Amino acid sequence: MQQAIGDYVGEHDWLSFVASGFQQKTTVRTVYSATMIEKPEDDEIWFEFTGNGFLYNQIRIMVGVLLEIGNGSRPVDDIPRLLEAKDRQQARFTAPAQGLYLMSVEY
Image (cartoon, rainbow, N blue to C red; front, side, top):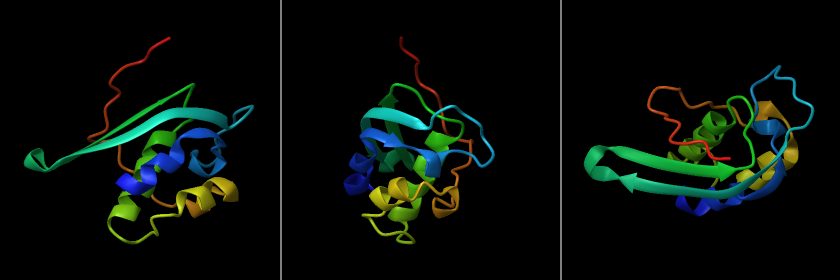
């Protein structure tokens, strides 16, 4: 997961990472940073993403893909392929909302 998370950084079309049926003028967004901190003493993994905007369920889908990479059900180099595919069905798993927290919003 640590190796893969950096593939999210940059300007991308996030169509594979938005909830099905969501209508938006554009799905292009820029992720400025993406980091992961493992907290084994608390049995937690912290993900932090900063960007110029996020789509509906985008973060949950991004985390879901990382968790699949972590459990070995998806190859570590799969994120660029998913971004290129622009197909929501390719990024199957959406992480549950429980345990995910919005830490801050800055303008």
